[in-house]
Image (tube, rainbow, N blue to C red; front, top):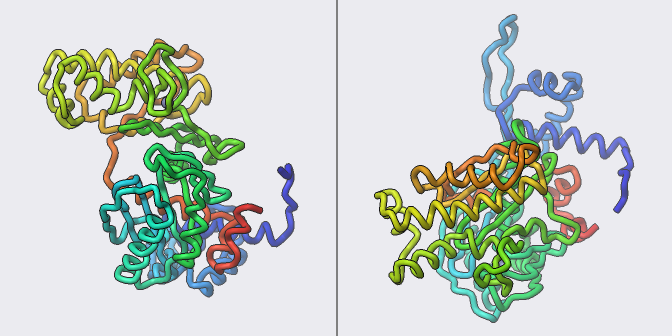
Length: 405
Ligand SMILES: [Zn+2]
């Protein structure tokens, strides 16, 4: 890995161009405002804006208010929606979700189809391409710039390969990205779902927090880490996989084959299993448990407060000790439990960490239905709004070799 990149003037130019493009993506702005924020001269900003308008990426959208000192009303700039759209996809082995998003990662239209996974990966990928091509043809007038494809499992973003996924058990080292690139004829960026949602959070948090961890507790557990505003993928693309760290040697058997993984104790699957074992009931859903907890049923409250909340708190304390993040975002359907669920999680987190490590803000957020598709679009944005990848994607050069280079 090269320690220093050469600071050629072309690098600086593309860097400035991307900085300004990213600012306009976040907020409608005038040339003067941009010059003010980035500390560049007005003529230098105007020259980059001219280039962005000529490229079809940015457009003028009318006049803003005059400043307090008066003068002409400034012309406001926005991303030109005619430039193109993003195809975002989430596949969990049962349902294929797809959406057309704009270059700000807003969902414009979405659809989903049932597509149960089989061991014949070639046939499933053919089917996926077929659905995606038909969807794009019907729903997007603008050019599709790239596709973001999100799934559970160990994903190597450099080689565009799914290494392994519990959701697709027979698939190992499948070059999903390359196959789909060939069939869709656009750049395809694949990503693990937890890391993709961390990119989504990075966009929301960037002006407030630089180092944070997102934890999604669902039927499994997904974790993603942003260090100093950068998504962390580890040296071998597998980070961060807290779900399968052992937290209790004598704990239950995990889907991965080990005993006592965090996921085997703190996931909704673990909660359901625990409740069914204790109550001897069968076929319960997590919504049943939430309803009964919130109605105050003592047995259910005991399990949720002293088992699930306990193990979630233990895992969060471990995460805090490793990364010392400013914030841990807990995304979960379990956040629908009324008090004292959250208080119990926090109490265990405080008890199991120490004053040096329990300063992270714990934010409890319920999962919204569009999270996966928005995150998949955000994956594309993370490349599109980057100096290293922008040209390859936008001008449609050889983006695959860029990823590996
Ligand atoms: Zn495990």
